[in-house]
Amino acid sequence: MEDIKTDSRRLEELNIEERRKKILELLHQEGKVKVVELSKLFAISEVTIRGDLDALEKEGLLERVHGGATSQYRTYYNMNFHDRMETNEEEKRRVAVEAASMINDGDTIILGSGTTPLYVVRELKDKKNIIIITNSLSVAQEAGHNKNIKFILLLGGNFNTEYQFTSGDDAISQLGIYKADKLILSSDGVSAEYGVTTYHHLEAELNRQMIARVSKTIVVADYTKIGRASFAHIIGTDKVDCLITNQNANKDELAAFMDRGIEVRLV
Image (cartoon, rainbow, N blue to C red):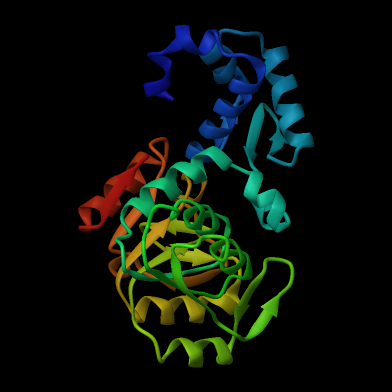
């Protein structure tokens, strides 16, 4: 918390909603927070901090422990697609804007499933003659509203009704006949040690095939995903060309990515 302590005057002026959002940022960066330290950081009473943590726990955003709280990130896995869209919405939008800036007119792009790729599609309104290949029904439907999208190919296969994506042998076989310029890949975890991971193990092999079919792999992840490892491994960091995330992501992890020659864009 050292970097944030230098800005204590500003932190003292935060309203309740802003303060709780900052607490969650600290929690995602460090894995746990302590009541005593937060009280000093925000210059408010420990009673008030406990009230903040209790409220955030009721929302399923953290888990209270003696003296503080730990991350309850697993709760995100249990959210439906709509709730995921609204979680860290502004951070995802910023990532999406940057990802869209890397798409050129005439590109063929593969878009994986997840909420951030859906935000990316919404930012392609000024691009011309784009071809989209995707296993996400939500992405395909959103792209269908953009008259500048030249062609949309929705991969068939086993359909996950809860999260609106296809996977399996049929999707993999169909993907194998195509080649694209760029892949926009979302994930549930991006770690220098464990690579890119996903909660949906049935989709992992399709994601690997997507990477094999493109010239450039762009991983999009809001700051909460950085430094985390999920259930199923997709690829190591050596297969990632560019990572787009938020400026408040774990700095040690970002440094490790850059040390490995990965282009890191912070928004």
